[in-house]
Image 1 (cartoon, rainbow, N blue to C red):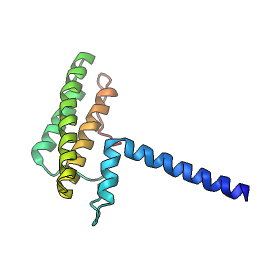
Image 2 (tube, one colour):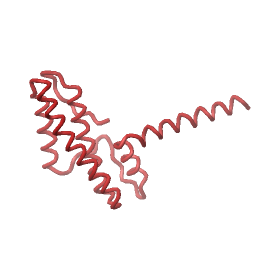
Image 3 (cartoon, helix red, strand yellow):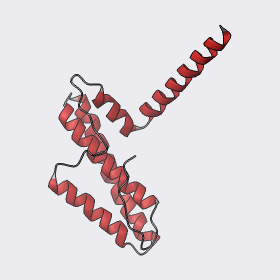
Image 4 (spheres, helix red, strand yellow):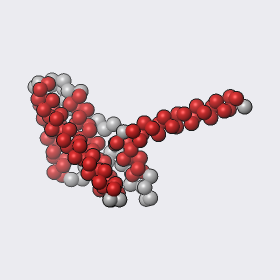
Length: 135
């Protein structure tokens, strides 16, 4: 009986740790909430930005990072990008408050892209190609 209780406790502990980790990060929390709506509005790794202007802004920022020649340039880009991250997050929160699942999905995708650019700034090295990785 003790071994079974230990196994159940370990399994529950793992589940709770995973749930905490998911809900702690705004991006994974938004994806979780969208997935559990009725009907679900899934956001996958392959979900793309639908707004062409927004896509161009993301690509322009990616290019700026790639073409940067100094850490100071990257720091400036990161600071500008942080404003976009914050704005996308606020719009995401507002979409959920209003119960607008489609807008929440779109803002989740946008938020993911801006976070990816933050990561690209963090990983920057002179001459290194910038790959947008969504975490």
